Length: 205
Ligand code: URA
Image (cartoon, rainbow, N blue to C red):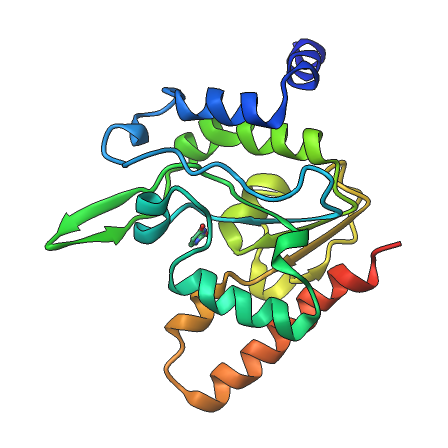
């Protein structure tokens, strides 16, 4: 029952949750991945950022957002006036999913894998109780708001009542910006991304 799960989570420290997630076998992704990449940041954080899943470098380092997408996120956070060390950063799915073709190429997690991993991100939300949650990309937004959420059309403050946090912002994933080829478009999209991140600072009480 949800009440029991909630009571159990409430009894566990963040370190204990991390340890439980490390041993997670709810889906097969742990078999090929190096390790579980749990969230990081102060449990007292007022703002939580939720990405998609660890990438190649995160899988090796065991920390979220340390690869190319993470470096772009760092730049955007700086421009938005947010300090990374004040935030709690995590992912919807805690293991890297990839196919090996010389190098390890990112693959989207299935609906089933996302569903099986969801207790961990919900536990993190319950523990941290952030004032603001920023959902980065469609995997996070679809897993946590609505399976039909369209990030490019519905980005920004999420107006529908959501029990996740008092304020929820949905925006693009930093890797979306990395995939753009045109320089002008990249600059415009970066500015929009930074503007979305600023919503998280404005909404802070
Ligand atoms: N992309 C994500 O969604 N999360 C990470 O931690 C790294 C890349």
